[in-house]
Length: 282
Image (cartoon, helix red, strand yellow):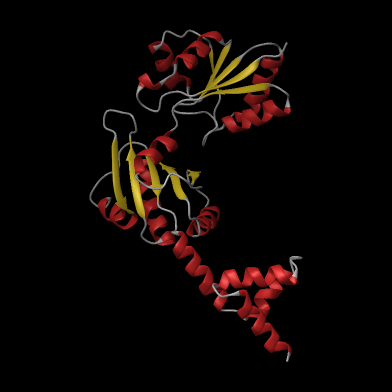
């Protein structure tokens, strides 16, 4: 009978945040796959866990996944842990999960600490709708495309950043998004935890005289819906109504529904659209 993969959330700072279920599972499984065994041994020693460990990280994620799946197919149960937080969130664990599913290995997740949600709840920004971007990519072209997308994002935006890249990332966000409300979260759940509500502009100025320390979570205000709607209306004003209609009808939308959508986009009544189009036919 095949074994299982257990995704085990570990503390992001305070060791008291680990769940009894995670401790019990780490003691029970046959093998623990850890992002950095040198870091994870401290956690295991603290909770008197003596299960064997193997490394599973960004640079061996495919080859090691094949090996782990072979072991699970042979009946072993494996737990996956990351250095801090929930595996598969901005983490190579997502590759192992996908490969396990393809191999029909059962995967279960033991919930616990995750930095992005912890920061969101502390931010004071809207929590009803949000998106998680993780770390912005190093590739300049890919990063530019993501920042272009974020310009239009009306949900609260959550990002991770290392201290030595923080100043540059804040400048790029300010340049792309303009000045937005921002909450900088640092060293969450640790002794020197800091939650600082500010703005992108003020944060850029702050870092000119302050050296960032610790891992950061950035929670950025999304574009307001009223601002988004206003920009959309301004964009539509730049083309004639008949062209606006053609854009919808070319998608297979019938004439009546297209008129309704054009009216909504432009902030006018459907009757006004109808009368305009009628005038073109005369």
